[in-house]
Image (cartoon, one colour):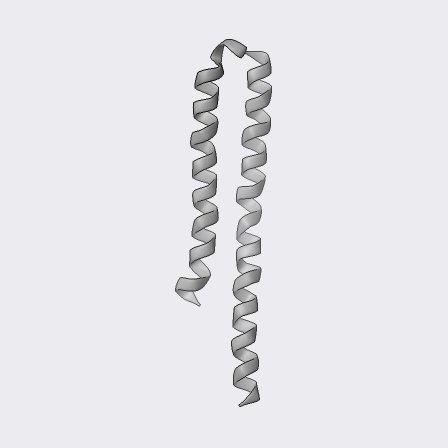
Amino acid sequence: MAAMETLAALEGNIGAVGYGLAAIGPGVGVGIIFGNGTQALARQPEAAGLIRANQILGFAFCEALALIGIVMPFVYG
């Protein structure tokens, strides 16, 4: 019986590690998006509206990947 409890605890920990690994990509992506957006705003301040709109769209796509990473361990675990 103790083996079953250990296995259940291990599955929960594996899901947490899986989400941690899944969050790395979107975290890096958001950093790249806003870093490059800031550089673009410094180079072309007159295009600020278009640059910010593209930044927000890219941020939304990156965060969608993070949300998928949250859901997958629960769906398949």
